[in-house]
Length: 348
Image (tube, rainbow, N blue to C red; front, side):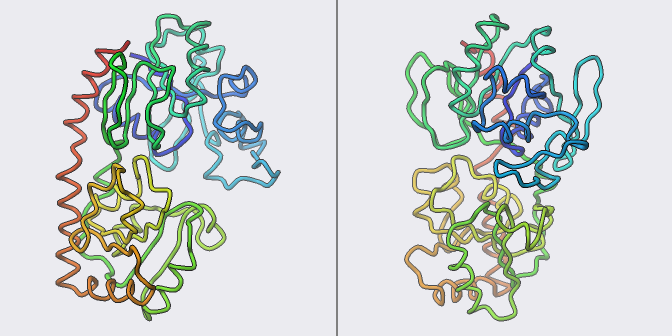
């Protein structure tokens, strides 16, 4: 089975490769070349420079820019390195180590695709049009990775969020987005006096700084978009495994929650305001003073006191092991792949 996925988030796309290619034996492709944007069949963000970041060819020669005209960092130029064979582009994904298959709109139209997978609401009508005009035997799957709930226009829903109600005539499957658990794995020798954040454009960095003021001698670091000047691109799994606590202050919560699931796969407890995750998928991982430190309503000195308590070697070992165990109680990628295969057999 050939699947075209729209590609707007690197970790999501990699999870689709792990699921559909590695586990279920299908082939996953994504769009490449600006013709997709010109024909209004790709619209992650309605700006030509955003389209250029994701779709344009020859990026090594014509470096993409952001919507303000500034040069994008190399790791944001997703088509920087590729080879082409018989109209198929094999694009190096330096972050995950698995090449992407990519096709131009012309090449797509000459092939037979079974599934078009959209992952943002604005692509649902575009992919329906693409099916009607160029691939009438294909089915559309809407992959829900953010807390959007049911969206009209797609009869097949693959959701990595907390379950939500869908109409009776909709084929739905709820699952967890897969990642490499050999890479994100338990390490029993962390530096216990460390606190790291991996949230892009994090909210309230001042709160983290205020907590850090009460933790002399600790390593306190912020990674992610918005902090490139400080740290640049990093190997996140290595940082998680070598650290102790993951600061994850995110008032908007997560649909899925790559950072939280990854940190728990490493046995690294999170520091969270648990109210942000009420009704969200990752809430299953968060048990205050067992697998996480809940900072809801606390002042910086009180948060620091909790961190100092749980960083004591015996206490930390207990919480770290509980975090790892909880991840394995909640997540089973192999078992979920079987459910996804049954979902695929029911496509409408």
